Image 1: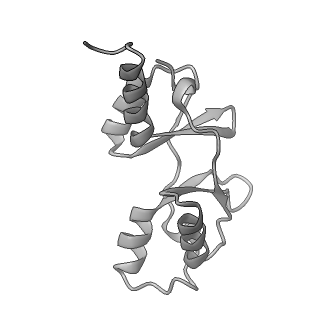
Image 2 (image 1 turned 90 degrees about the horizontal axis):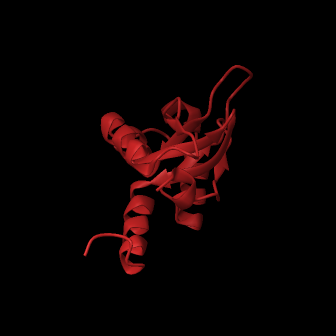
Length: 134
């Protein structure tokens, strides 16, 4: 199975200079676990901010969520895979880097995302179609 078969194409971005409260509102409103952080300036790279980052790097540390900017706690660079990559290779990357999602990139553009939940969902669908196991 290829990454492009299960990737989610709807990706939510947030500006690197947005406050953490802006990120929290967007995540709660759209029921997301992560947001792609746009490059702060020329030469910068995309990052990712997750629910885990906000809770453990900001809330737990008593940071001011109004004043702290997304780029201050975002993880960079994002781990990108090619859309034609086998899903098992993507799983290995996720395991090796201890991450819950990889981004699907086409040159310098992020075109999709694959999370652990997407992988589990794909295997449920395969089983329902009779394409996996007995």
